[in-house]
Image (cartoon, rainbow, N blue to C red; front, side, top):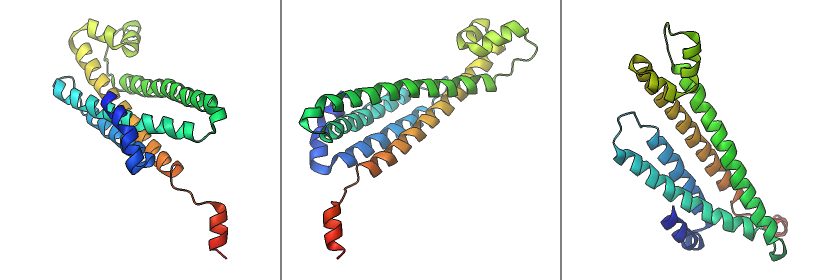
Length: 187
C-alpha cells in the first residue's frame, strides 16, 4: 500500500486520476478474486501475492481519490472536503465489513451439515468456527469446508463491489465539457 500510495500522485499527474483510481480498483478486485482461491491448505505464497496486489490497488485508488475530492472544492471549504473524504472512507469500511462479514457468516451456516448433533451444540457450531474446531472430528472438518465456502463467496462479492466502484469512478471522473462550449459548438 505505502509504495503505491507514494507513486500514485505522480502517476495521476501524468496519466490522470481517473486512470490511476480505476486501475487501483481493478487491482483490488483482481486481488480479491485471487484470494477467493484460498483453501484450508493454501500456501502462504498465494496469500502474500493476493495481499501485495490488494495493497498496491488500495494505494493507487485512495491517494488520487483523496486529491480529487479536495480539489473539487475551493480552498475555503477544504475542511469540508477532508471531512467528507474521511466520513466516506470510514462509513464505507464499516458497512463493507458488516456486509461482507454477514455474507461469510450466512454462507458458513448454510454450508454446514451437522447430522444428529444435539441442537444446543449444533447452534453454537453454526455461530462459531472456533466452537466447531474445538468439537473436533467430522464437525471441525465440516466447519472448515463451510468457512472456506463462506470466504470464497464473501471475497467474490467484495470483488464485485470493487468492480462496481471502478465503473462508478470511471463515470464520475470522466472528462466533462463546459456547457457554454457545448452550446457554442452546437450553433
